[in-house]
Length: 217
Image (cartoon, rainbow, N blue to C red; front, side, top):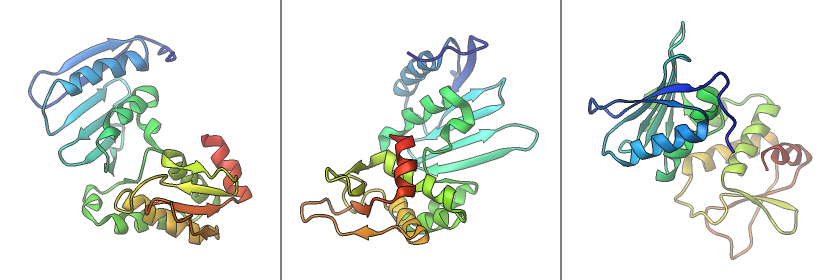
């Protein structure tokens, strides 16, 4: 059960550029998610915007462009942008926004401050993202985030498997980031079994990774 908003209820504005904005007053994030899901699925639009006016924050979903933006309308405007490779990512991002606003999406994917960065190749985006991590603790946290999104622990308990059952054409940006972070951290990448999917990345367990992945499990 979703934790109620305190103070509540909370107000959001949903917009899709058609002039039929929807103002909702909801008691908890789940109620907000249900209302927005109906709004999202009931329209065909280039953009869908969720605005939390009291908090001066917005989330913009752009499914036709494959992008998501999050915005803080505070004293100093701040915005970050995300390339979306899977269509089932839009509504989960909305739920995270309803739960914890702008900060709720911190670990949702590879955010960039310049929207034009999203037009670079996946490999370029992944390398740029990895280069931003210069401290070991932050890099380990990012590796664990990538693993938590689509990874498993091998039944032998000796390996972390990233991008479980994914083809090599999927998750190209995050794979490029991960491979660079593996090298930066000195983690040991190993060959997966012959039956492993082509996009999987197998990494031998490491005490640093064990601790961080446990937090994401």
